[in-house]
Length: 326
Image 1 (tube, rainbow, N blue to C red):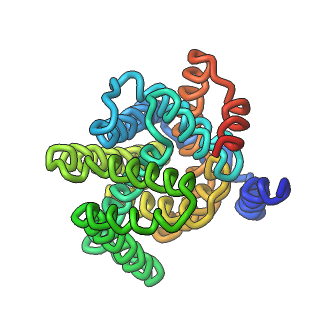
Image 2 (image 1 turned 135 degrees about the horizontal axis):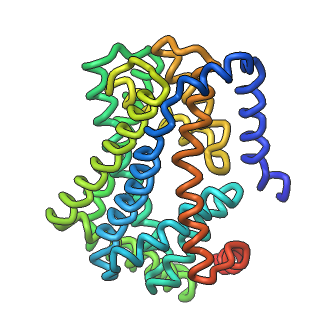
Image 3 (image 1 turned 180 degrees about the horizontal axis):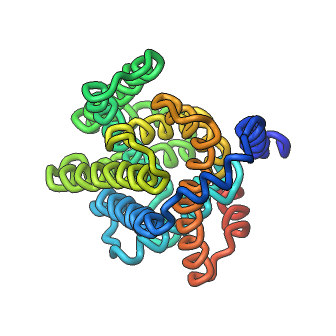
């Protein structure tokens, strides 16, 4: 079990080794001279802005369950992002759920459902972006296949949630009949979890909430593209804005397929693969990925670390309590 917990770390290290295996270090000096480091300042600012936007999206999702201030959720969202990147395997997600449930007195099921809605809206944006760029850029066959896969998965999830929302009373009645046939304590847990799940879906019944969450989701994905395009300009790449969003899509798919702590290795190989579609050689692409990672990932980690210290939180202590309590 201990070895299994560190498999994502081992995979990340292996991917980094593969990435740098044939890196041409002789080009590094020339690449560094060509970079416009002043452009990195707005990249960092846009990265932090995106962290704030995503925290406010979660606030709107949880709004029907618990009223949370924008500043408060930004601090805890930052801590959760820091934990998710710093801890191995899925420990960060467990800590994130425990932190939010303890801080805002909502059930873990409600928070996990809210986090799942985040993923759903991101999936819708990803699918829409893949459809949009397919009209602007000729995509490789494998990316078109993934577009279809993402579309089927997202549409299926939306249909399932709609059916649950529309028929939740009938489902509740069936659940009560089922609960009569099982031990009372287990039945209570099932009922509590189901009610928390339905409560977290309340947001989907409000057109105002759906509109706001959709807007924040689109804004977040737009910022991702802006960050990549600014990095193109910093490196002197001549690709247009649509190429930036192609790279956003490839990176998003990669980090879902292969999960490593902080997306180390996965992120870098995805950048190499995405930029190869536009004729960028591996050494330049890998240099691009390393600098992009540094200017987007480290400020997010630093922000989360600062809020962690400010709130007096021990991530390992929280992790131990969360894993024993789940």
